[in-house]
Amino acid sequence: MQNPWPSSPPATSANSLSAPDGFVRPPPPSMMHVKRVTLTSKKNWWMVEMDEDSENKSSASTTETNGDPFHYSSDYVHHDIKREHTKTPPPPSTPGPTMPPMDYRIPRHPNAIFSFPTPTPYSAPSANPTATLAPCANGSASELFKCIVKKPDVVQMEINDEMQSNASDVTVQFLAELRVYTTVQTHRNICTFLGSLENVGMVLEYIDGRTLFDVISVRPKLSTLKKIDFHNQLLDGLTHLHSYGLSHGDLSLLNIQVTNSSDTIKLLDFGRSVSADSVYANPEAEPVDPFTLLAKRTSIFSPLPPSKTEQIHPGTRPFCAPEILRGECQDARLADAYSFGLIIVCLDRCETVDLKPWDQRKDLLPKDLFEDCSVFEDRARAYLQRWNSRRRLVKEDIMSLP
Image (cartoon, rainbow, N blue to C red):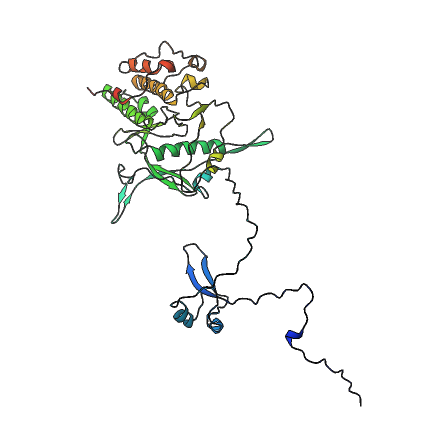
């Protein structure tokens, strides 16, 4: 009887099988096991170091792990961690194509100053910035201070079917102000800088006071002694700032605070400050892109590189110097001297003054500007000269109190 089932082919060994032409047998997969698990400080991150099993294949059964990188057996802890592994050099491999560096584009928003990849290297220049501040409360193990958080405020609006934004100008002002606070050493007549908050802004001391405009507007008028005291404090703070090669850029009665407790002058708002080493551009020229400056940093922990070109913008009327109004300013600290001259005129008269812009551009002063100036007239005239004959601000001009 014929067998209904076909006879199976004779069994052959694996070595007797013929491989097709061009076939290269892949190398056997190397056994890998976890050598060490290291937790890092980053949330949901761990580091697993893999090592080739070149010693004993039988040990692979005791060192294999399941899907959980945090799970390992007691045998693994007892045997593998305490013994030294003998690593075999990996086989030579041809280098693959190198990946191009990641092109990170700085977000075109002022918050890029205070966030990654440009985290704040901005810290107070003094080791103890609160040394000159009075705490508002004391605890059993702490002191509490009031402070101000100043953060960027961007405005966008549509003009002629185009979106316009002040993000670039806000960034320029914050970079200028941070340069002052991180360069100039702490001074009693300059607002104290306490540091920066990541992704928020800068932290400044809280000034319990009023503006110099409010001070000169009260009646009865200030005494001669108080006028000289305010003059000396202003001059001391400004010359300290100028000694670092930086200007204020927008001196006015509103940017000067007077504390309620001790009548201490405080200079603030340095957003229009420029460096004496910079080349000054006309404010009508193409704006300098601050985000290009941010992208030039060599390290996220390094300070910002100095800007070689800065624009000088007109400040508050009528305290802005004529050469700035004409777009011809070559010395920003001399422009501060002009603003200081008008401020001490207001301080001497205990009232505000006004100048016609078209006359001010020509360095013309009203004939009645120095009426009732019994204390500072000669000094004010020297500060209000044309820029090439104007007196600079120097500490030697501090007046002695009668």
